[in-house]
Structure formats: structure tokens, C-alpha cells
Image 1 (spheres, rainbow, N blue to C red):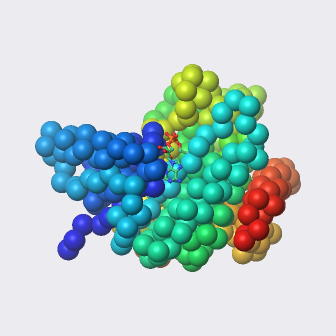
Image 2: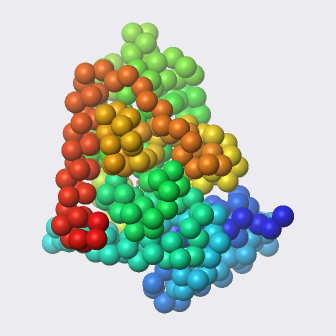
Length: 319
Ligand code: TXD
């Protein structure tokens, strides 16, 4: 059986880390696509030379030609520009929307059967636009944010409870970062919900509130520390987990930006919800009953996404 093919559109910090992880895990052959000249080929060559040491077999190729992503099984999109000082959100939206148009058309022409994971910010709007431009079925296009946000949450909870991160699960809904909605009742240590752990004296509501706040601002904390650029190790790992769920038909239950058709009272938008990812892409949306506070917070998230989509439609009349 031929190896699977993973196309990474955007070969920057996250793209390069994705390539490293995909090769190390022998997920398939890897194509690094970027408009920057030489850089994707340089990263592909460097990573290929890690192969003999690490012992992985994968063909890695760098390219600026969309034809090279032909037949990809999975496409992970990080292409775009981050916000620079003096730039408004609309400036960023306008630039990345154009990038999504080029990427969407490249996918449509070369690998319309792929499972596509979008990472580019502002995530919930860019994944929607990428789906529109590519014309792929909604169940084959998802956005990565929830796995990262919940991983950050799990890390902080594990530290607070002084237990293994493996035993901590977290349940988050809503948009990326600021508008994420953590549901403490469904976040657990080995199945014990956080509110019970508070009752057991393991922590306090105040500490939980502080952790939620830190998680929401988790991306910003790293941007500040790095001084240049944003997080890339954990975002890349999170997207790889989603890709593996598809390639191995694992039917993982993961929080992702998925297209809703009435679930949670939302129709026609991409919003962060738990979904089942298997060989058919998004196989199910997990819809839980929300309490009043979560409903209000979720609505804030949905309204923020709606506003971004309106801005996208104002910039590109084909949407
Ligand atoms: O949770 C999440 N979704 C995120 C999202 C977590 C962290 C970072 N998040 C966003 O991912 C971030 O705001 C950016 O929008 C993307 C990619 O982040 P990365 O750190 O990898 O950015 P880089 O290093 O700037 O890489 C972007 C690359 C760069 O090499 C550009 O040359 C390339 O994108 N680029 C393009 N590639 C292909 N096609 C076009 N048109 C293009 N334009 C720029």
C-alpha cells in the first residue's frame, strides 16, 4: 500500500513543526508548500536528513507549486500573516481571506478528496472561508483551536491538582482563546468532575476561575514571552492528533471548529464543539445540554464569529 500523503500549506513555524511530527510518526509522505522561495525546500531537506538518525521513512518535499499537493489525504493550512503593530483586525482579515481564497482554490483543483484542517487565524472565520472557497463537503473541513485550548487547560489543571496530565480531561466549547467556554462539570481527573474535586478540597473555585482566565489568554502569554511570533509546538501537536484521528479512523472525540446545522441553536457557522473524527471526517457533533451561564458564554462566541463572517462578506463579494 502506498504511503499516505500529508500536505502542509504554510511552511512557517507551525508548518515546519507539523512536518517534523508527521515524519517522526511515519504518518506518510509530506509536502511543505509556501509562497516563500526556497524555505519549504530547505526545511524539507533538513528534516529528511533527520530521517537516518531518527529512523523514519518518509519523502519530504518543499514546493511553491500547488500541483505538488495533488492527491493529498490530509491538508493542514497555516498559511497567512499574523497581526503586526498598527494593523487592524480587518487588515489581517482582508489579507488572510485572500490567502484562504488561493489555498481553497489550490485544494479544490488538486486534492478535493482530502480532509482539511485549518489553523490560520482568525480561526473560526478562516475555516468557514476556506470551506467556501474550496467547495469541499463541510464534514471534510475543520478548524483546530479546541484541542489546543483544552490542552492548555489540562496542563494548568494537572499542575494545580498535582496529577498526571494524562488523567486530566477538559471540555471546552466556543471560539478560540478569549471566547472559549470551558465546562467545568465535564472536565475531570480520572472521571471525577472538577466541581467534585473542589468539594473534596483539592482546589477552590477562585483558583479554577484564575486557571480559566489564564487558559483564555494562553496564546497571548506565549506571544509575550517569545517576543516574536506565536505558539507552534502545541498547536502543531494538536492538529496532528486530529489528522491521525482521520487517517486511522480512530473516531476520537475532540473539540474542533465544525460546521453546525442547527446543533446548539447555530446554523451555517463554524464554531468550536466536540466532534467525532473518523474516516468520514466529521462523523458526529456531540451536543450536550448547556447550563444558563454556558449558554450565555457560548452565545458571545457565536456572535463574535458572526461578526467576523459579515466582515469577510464585506471584503469579498463572492462569499
Ligand atoms: O489555535 C490556533 N488555531 C492557532 C492559530 C494557534 C497558534 C497560531 N495560530 C495561527 O496559525 C497564527 O495566527 C497564524 O495565522 C497561523 C500560522 O502560524 P505560524 O506561527 O506557523 O506563522 P508563520 O511562521 O508566519 O507561517 C505562516 C506561513 C509563512 O511561512 C508564509 O510565508 C506563509 O504562511 N504564507 C503562505 N503560504 C502559502 N500561500 C500563501 N498565500 C501564503 N501567505 C503566507
